[in-house]
Image (cartoon, rainbow, N blue to C red; front, top):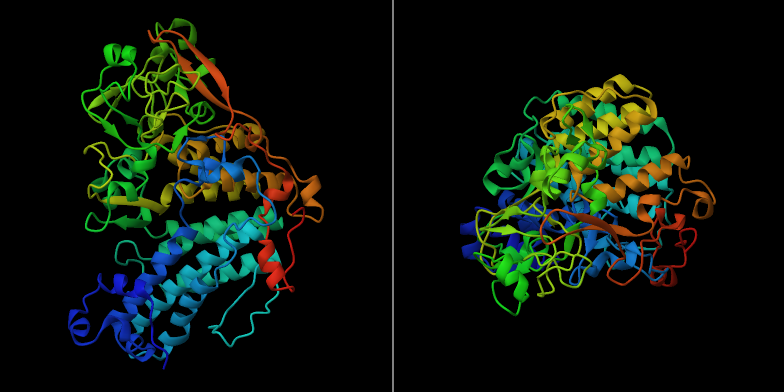
Length: 575
């Protein structure tokens, strides 16, 4: 019997109540027989699978590949993709055999384990859920993939051809169906449930519908949504509760699945906060003389910002004008009547704006953040002419408030709790609305868009538009609702481009829509030192290049090294 020598299993078992077992046997000497005959060890093993696979269904920073987010000097991991400085050698996550093998081991061994039916169904359901997560990730990024249903070992034949893209999506969705049938309605926080399987199926089927150009997938979105909404345990919450404090995030009835990090093994530098919070202090090495004098800080700000929101994102948060109507900020009466930039641009905004964006003169930890000329949080190297010289200040005139807990000063090594929203009801409502639009049911789409628009946006009117105006309202609503969540902005732009192109057809690398929102310059805002005037300006990415998108990037390349090693594999078009 081969020994299970996964070191991460030791880490996972530390979260289970198997101390007596752990006291009697060295942790690196558990055999497969041990694991599949002890429920605590089997649970520990499934925790290992979660640790390795959760990244396939959530990524808080992947929107940095779009115009909504500017990469800063220490956050260039997505710049090469964003400006299309990649080639066929680029590996966008192709090799997943080890993670697939992990979940396949669960599916192979649990049916014969001496556990209760409830225990076996839960573990099998979680394995199907995670395998569906992996294959939905692969289908989205690469199209056709190598489908592996059995446990492979060193003696197995790895000469497995790529499936069609349709088969890849169908396999992912079938796994999520199996998960929904087996999983309980409730589970330990952070573990999959029946509702999580329905919610993820909605997300995956929506993407499949556009790429495959088949309405049956939109119908599947609605069917899964109907089942999810019938589970009355979920309801919309105040938007700030989801993202601005740990205590409210973990208790939110809107969250369907979270990734919960505890302060016992998490520090600030292991959370998004380290990459979203700027770096500034009331000292000459970090602030100019003008900033020290005019915009002093009460306490240091100790993040090291990699990502900042752009004007392109901020433009989509609506304003309630003096006449009570909702408008883009540059179409309101406040542009002419406002005495300063706050009155012209930032008052009466969508409530999500205040929960998501730090703008000039916002409260920020124990300070006021000035994102203007000579400001204490605006970079001196940008057109802002700011006063912060640390290298960790905003280049756009904005910072993120979403996913930042301001109750405690950030210090990179200090312990902190953190809660990522992986699947939630707000996204499910919008997925349902988009499927309804695709199926021609505009009335139902309006109903579901209005739910997040009112509860999260704070507006009292309903969405009443139709046809192209409804589509534009929906796109804007999704943008401000789901920024920094699971790469949704990038995924959505690709999905909408595919739908407009009639699906992934032969020759797509030349003829599909070149997505305008993924092409060209970004935008920031420069505010005068007195806070009365402003100018919107253009920005390239940190490598000096504007955004670039050519249609071949609807799918990433299969890494050429994998094709060289396994000639049965084929390359995606255009690469």
